Amino acid sequence: MSPIFSADTPQRFPDNFVFGGATAAYQVEGACQTHGKGKVAWDDYLAQQGRFSPEPACDFYNRYDSDLELCERFGMNGIRVSIAWSRIFPNGGVGEPNPEGIAFYHNLFASCRARGVEPYVTLHHFDSPAALYANGDFLNRDTIDAFEAYARFCFDEYPEVTRWFTFNEIAAATLNRYVEGTWPQGKKGCLHECLQAQHNMMLAHARAVLAYKQGGYPGTIGVIHALEYKYPYDPACPGDVQAAKNDDVLQNRLLLDATFRGDYAPDTLQIIDHLCQASNGSVEFLDDDLSIMRRAAQLNDCLGINYYQSRFLKAFDGETDLHHNGTGDKGTGRWRVAGVGERAVRPGVPTTDWDWIIYPKGLFDLMMDISLCYPNYKQLFITENGMGRKDQLVDGTVDDSERIAYVEDHLRWILKAIECGVDVGGYFMWSLQDQFSWTNGYNKRYGFFYVDFETQQRTPKASAYWFKRVAQTKRL
Picture 1 (tube, one colour):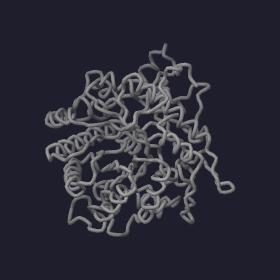
Picture 2 (spheres, helix red, strand yellow):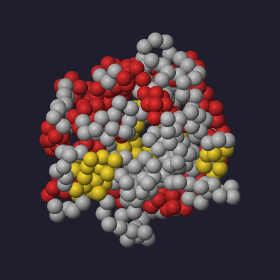
Picture 3 (cartoon, one colour):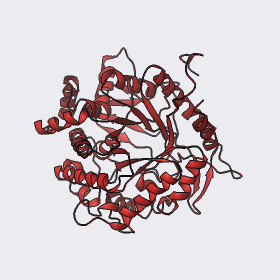
Picture 4 (cartoon, one colour):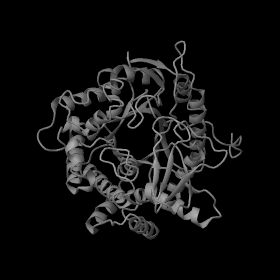
């Protein structure tokens, strides 16, 4: 354990701290094109690839009640779920809503309440309806209008939900499509399109927040960002320092500025301009957009942080060179982007089989940075954190002690942030149960509960029993 933790560091979480597990509609529900649900871009994309299918995933559509019973039994008082936009509006806002989809989520939320598990509901988790996605998704401003209308419908339809998030991981949705090229209709190195889509999605978020507040709904609303602290590989090297700043704006700073300022700080704008020039493009931030975003920036009730790793950046002057490690073949991932930098691993820093850096202190540094740079933040939630592993079921048990150590280290840094005055409301491990993964299929397991995808049987892992004790005692 790091020397920063002393006998005076608190070992107990606040009494109202939420401990839960996280899910996402497309990754757990199955029933992808049945019960009136419309297509999303992933449906055809995955079918064309032929590597793996999201059907039936872990069949949450039919098994949510038994999964919520596991939450109750293992001490979790919160769960992250998302509403599949195309299950409500099959074509993304054109035509009548789907009654069966509407009823499904009413039943899901009722089951949550019956089990004493608070639902934290995300409106958009990487699953824009196919028609909107094919027409530019959030680069098309019509999608912003459609999202606001969808959000208003959900706020009215589901008064039983009092914890809302608009988007999950805008950075992942834009980087994977426009920079890394690993998502449907993906491109590589289109930094300006990535940044424009981020801005437009934050405008859609702002319009939903204003609609929620103007509607007087009795709950909270925020947004979830996938954040990674960006460190220069060599702090004494100016090129490495600049590369870290570039990557920070690309993944973190534009989104955080948009969330809490409603516009972009001068140093953020300077790097945005540099990134756009590097990809021979431009962005447009309309004055009316910024006016709306500035109003919403004062009304966010919370920010969700999805944290898995941090990055060490080196200066890089070559052509974009990317390889996504989606198989767990350790050491194969590469990320070198012209105009940004190269992501590298410092000696002695451990990584997962998917080349994800294990660096819990980065979460602390992020929380401190947000509390200092954006003092109008109100509350943070760690809405995802976890470790993907090639878990094995042996004699009816799963020993994932490596995951327990990972989560415990991150929880200790959360306690340290609370000690330093950061308001942290809860922790949701990704994921509740083993799920379908967008670019990894099923061999990358994150869950508290091992899923046999042939039989759909759930088996609690060692981490589930460990987490139960932590959740019930609020103590490490």
